[in-house]
Length: 421
Image (cartoon, rainbow, N blue to C red; front, side, top):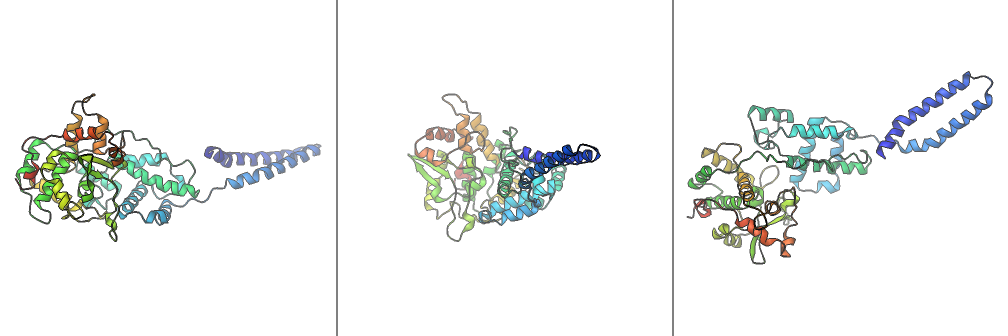
């Protein structure tokens, strides 16, 4: 319909005008055919009169600049009440779009602009929103990544998240007829599954020995907290923010199996920073707790906790995350140990878990890819339906099998990490 109406507006109307004009010129030059001329004039007038309402309906509303469209969108009632972290991400996405594609009338953008956005954003560092790179433009970030030979670039998964923010913006203005219906290329964009990973590597055994043999430096975050956070990461592959957000009520027992319940957090009164959603829909999941974590005392830890498991952590940073303080101190700690590779970070524990599980034999009696995706909370492939599935007893024993398949060398001991062995 969009193509048809566009054709009528841009092609048929001028063609009709030329036809009428040519006919009038021809008629003025024809002598002795007054009757024919009269009929032609009547038909022309009738044609104009008939098509006038059609073209009036096809009049397109003026399209605002992208920056103006964003401003209207961000101040709308349904958007401005979202958590500050989500608003900050939206603002960043729209800012980068303008840097890459310019501030043009919103109706003029198309799939070629989306292609350009992907092409450029996948060349910038994955940590572009942190530290000294925070205020750099996209062009500057690309040069920075090349100059410093950074391999951990922005992941396709993050770009998909960016496109979801663009899609929401487009849908909002589509309802106001300020963009063409059916022009939301962000809604059904096909990325495919990214096979080359996110640039990080699993922890080598030698570096794990350095972590466990070196005391955690004293400070606000104790060695006991350090050890348990690292222990949870190494056995579950949970993202750092997921671990730091764990609450007492997130440690649950399902049919005799102790689990971490990764789910949406509603804030307590006057504490808006506590509002949180897992990174993706697949992030909402249940993770059976490995017996090594239970032996290290995680259940007693949860029982004695006030609200969050790790009360030494605080909300900080622009996005008000609980992982910022620990993440920064962990990075400094590993650098002091001589582990300065940008591809070996806390997130690398997730790769240890993924690599170990995917190398476990499959088949009818082994671990299936579907269960691993469920356990790790991957956003591609199978999407977990969270705790409701397991409350019905569906597949819980399979996910327990996945959890307990994670093994480390004998030296890797959580109580030693905690400074209690």
